[in-house]
Length: 116
Length: 112
Image 1 (cartoon, rainbow over the protein chains, first blue to last red):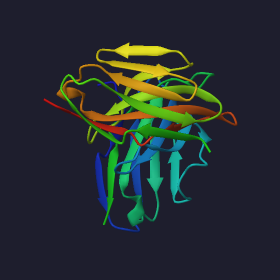
Image 2 (cartoon, helix red, strand yellow):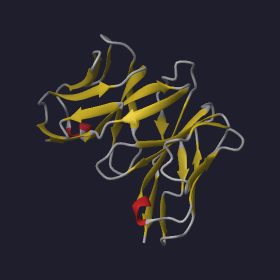
Image 3 (cartoon, rainbow over the protein chains, first blue to last red):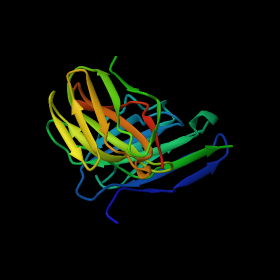
Image 4 (spheres, chains in turn green, purple):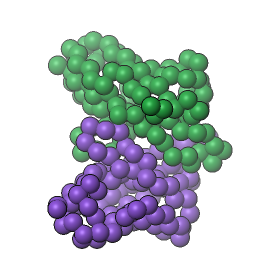
């Protein structure tokens, strides 16, 4: 399978704990995106990388959220001191980069986070 | 503020009953409009990209069209397996970055 993979698929944790999610993009894709999706809503953009550079992070929901892509391959999204409102599906997507920025994104099946 | 609005929120069709989904947008610096299909518990699956007004794309029973302010996803003679949520997204250029904005989606159910 050469699609986008996310791990874990499900995460249940207690409020106040830190969680980290991993995303492995399609190997030839140099752009990687993170989204949050809640029930009945479309994906909400959080941040994206071009190779290892994080080009947009103003949409991260708070300073408890951070993302890395250390070698331009896989990426991690960390949420510190989780809150009830963080319960959601976290989606990762990857795409080819282009000067026009208009390449389609290919999504993983997400990590569902539940905060007890 | 850039916005993407999809209508209707939900649509029930009988098998073979053609219809259209709408995506209207108010954005500046549009770099492309995308349609995705999302099944429950899965990530969105790419369907089409439209880049300029007047453009059309087709795939099986689906046809996407684009004007300067909206896009339509036409479904011809749908089958039960077309049941899913259909998402519209725009990619906007903003200060050298590219910000994707999704609509809330249209939940389509096709009854046999």
